[in-house]
Image (tube, rainbow, N blue to C red):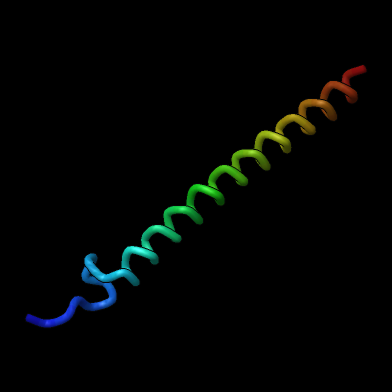
Length: 52
C-alpha cells in the first residue's frame, strides 16, 4: 500500500492545511463583517450630519 500523499485527506499535512484554511476563512470573514458594519455606521453618521 502506498503512503498517503499530501492531499489524500488522511495525511497530517492535509489536515493542517484544511484546518488553517478554515480558520483563516473564519477570521477573514468576521473581520470583513466588522469592517463593513463600521463603514456602514460611519456612512449613516455622515448622512445624518449632512441633513442637519
